[in-house]
Image (cartoon, rainbow, N blue to C red; front, side):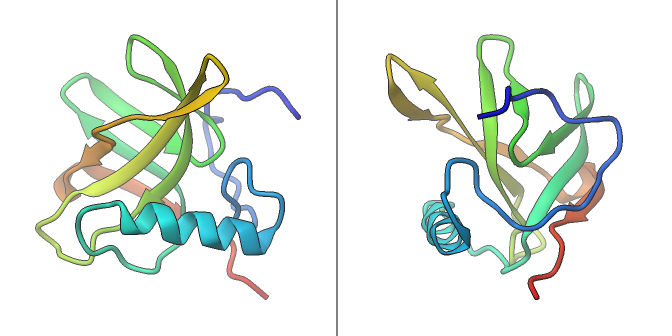
Length: 125
């Protein structure tokens, strides 16, 4: 497996995937499972990358790349667009600790006004 790195400066749209999923069926199952844990309704939009503002500056989260919360490096696993315009975007991230998956709880939440740029995965054939 390739070394996981921080997101590149610019987006290059890719085919939909979820890190660790062996194929597209497993990726879809994983994405739907993560979506159910969101706690609020999300759209079906498959988001690859989200650039946003927060109190510390501009951040970029991209599926398959690292995210840092000042304590750990996490892998971005999915980005969800809220169905309700008042709800925040949700960035699902995980890391491995002692051989076990650890999901960040709470996930990263981004208010709609703070979103600067969204890149979708390539449309499925």
